[in-house]
Image 1 (cartoon, rainbow, N blue to C red):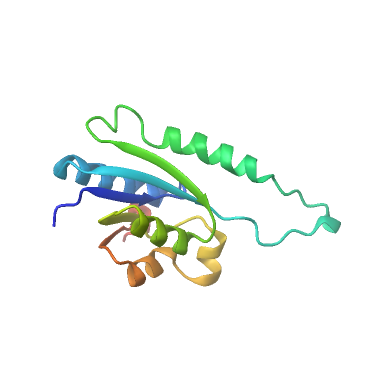
Image 2 (spheres, rainbow, N blue to C red):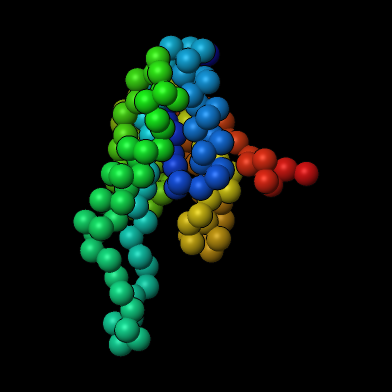
Length: 146
């Protein structure tokens, strides 16, 4: 297998950082391109009576644009074509749909994320591995290794 288009989902965690580093090495080795992909998980619970603040969708989108732009520096991406994308929605379905619709032949992602849904409903990486149509390389962060 020689990957040509690697999808790298990121939630901007340490685990995602390590997965990105692996993906960059694979991309250089195989001449593949990378799509750095972030899913904006819209807040699930908002109770105005309790004085909560809910950022506007554009705030999340602006943050995602800036974070994706800074995630891989020009120096780190030298020799690799990088595309940066974000979508609103549920991470598992958005990652799988993106990979299928855009012909990704490898997904490289971290095993420990930041998402609240990750804690409540099980590992996003685990569900992507179980249901993906293409190979998935999961990267366990050094901080989680013993």
